[in-house]
Image (cartoon, rainbow, N blue to C red; front, side):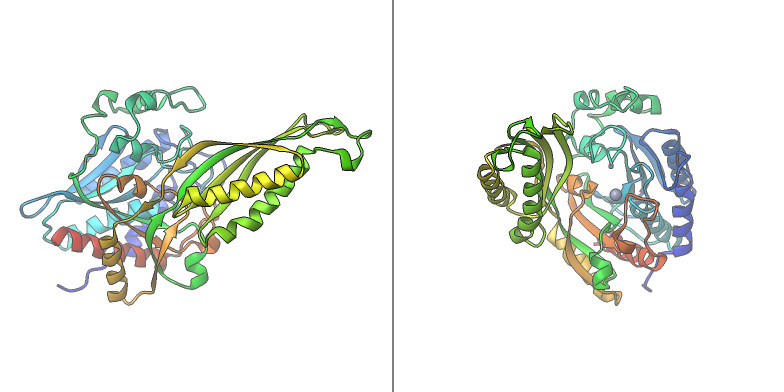
Length: 412
Ligand SMILES: [Zn+2]
């Protein structure tokens, strides 16, 4: 069969159209799960999928699926998709490239009457960003059973409405959650095309990233305790200044982290100083620490933590570290990495294997099926902002890799 390719004009039109479903005012895209904008975007996608003969269903916890039936015996579905929710004033490409790309792949299969042994499903996942209900990957986690109905009933958005209530108001009964859970065996594979959201591909001038591993996370609350005292009467040598200690800790953390590995990253994103007065030496500082890597997180963190404790002790401060969150690194299916690598070569593209520093639904889907993930370059690495941009030729190349992977998996 001649090489099939996606139609970038149709795909761009979808991306442009979906960008219009945003809560104004303000720049960028704001599309929150179960909002009016979300409903309108889903209606648009439903129309597009039904227009080419896909059977569209929506299931609790808010999953939308457009299914193209097998032309032969059937078997587990080959799924491709991503999310359509956004951060506040985010970009037009995050998640959308994967959804619109999966839709465009369906059009190519239908237009060319490609015989497929396995059904093909376009999958749209809700609440990936956690903007409304506070936790990332909520939709995929709930779908595979990692979040219970009880938990969804406790997760609230700012107006007090729980995930379950918002889902029911949208029209999906909470009672259907268990029945529609995604079990192992239902999918042959899940493929996600996504913008890279960093500068690795752009700086290497490489067109396609084949994701190997999604990074694991350890989240800590750190409390640094010194002695609050008079800012005028306490000589410099006698101070136990918790904030000055925190400053040193943060500087050392920045210096020490890269020595742990090429993919190790660590971020202090929040800081609170007590008592927080102009004329009082700070007695206590609380910091958030977000530590990520693709392997050996606990061993590496232990090294970093003992170094931080040493610094605190040297300054006469007490450091307490409490873990508040954690997720393990997830390796994506090696056979799918090989498949994607082969497609990149056959298409004459440049590609590289790389880990993902950001979390993605793909890592949750990996608990129930083989997962492959394709990255395309992000201009200047910008994402989660209105400036987020991926050039149409890059999207086209990524969607063609997705198409070839779907063709291989549905026909094999
Ligand atoms: Zn995303």
